[in-house]
Image 1: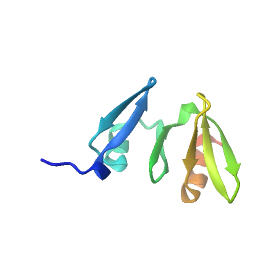
Image 2: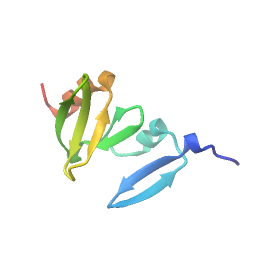
Image 3: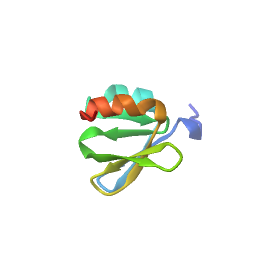
Image 4: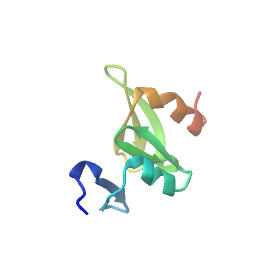
Length: 87
């Protein structure tokens, strides 16, 4: 069975990268509920998010404990705030 590159997902974990042949939605179905879809291209573990940042141009980012910033989709920001308990 051939798998297109668009169907592959990079998973960052413990400093390494693993490639999975699942869509983000399917991956989210098998991950613990501590994961949230924060962008069309990103999932994040909620307990790794330190705070949310508003960027220039009405863009948002989730700042992780590692200092890395991941984009947050505008349509996902409100749900993310609720999951994190931020009003």
